[in-house]
Image (cartoon, rainbow, N blue to C red; front, side, top):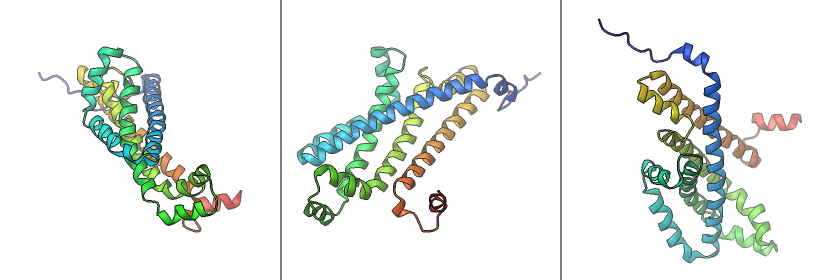
Length: 229
């Protein structure tokens, strides 16, 4: 007789392992947030360097391009023998990929600002910091948010890849499901990663709308909420 086929989702398993689901979700989110913040800070520094010293554009662009060509699986595999299995490996790898993805977005966002706008700010006597806060950031914000969205979703996907090496997150479910031929774990790992990516993207979109009220259409729900308060 043929063995009974394993169902795609074992609901009884899900109900009895909610604590494990929460643990993996926290691991995935934690690795994402730490790597996202570190990558954003480093990308901001690199962007500032490029804007201040234009001759650094070539070397920095070349470096980020070379790093981007390294397959994620190869990078994880190369770092594990050096740092062992733990949070150090995914944080290094994910931070590297995040700054590689985000830096070109930031450079392009600020390069697209019309020079007359900057000249007008200088003519008003603004300092470099005032010009950045009051003129450059508001103009560049949509492109910056777009870069942050791509970066966040990329990191969440790569955390899943890291799970195949036992580095935590929803990828652990996928790895274990493939090893045990247990489809439920694979489905949970995939759906968990997708939902986390959608939530991160929606959060950044909302932040972008809140941070740029002048770009919202009149009569929007956000405007109504602000008026009510």
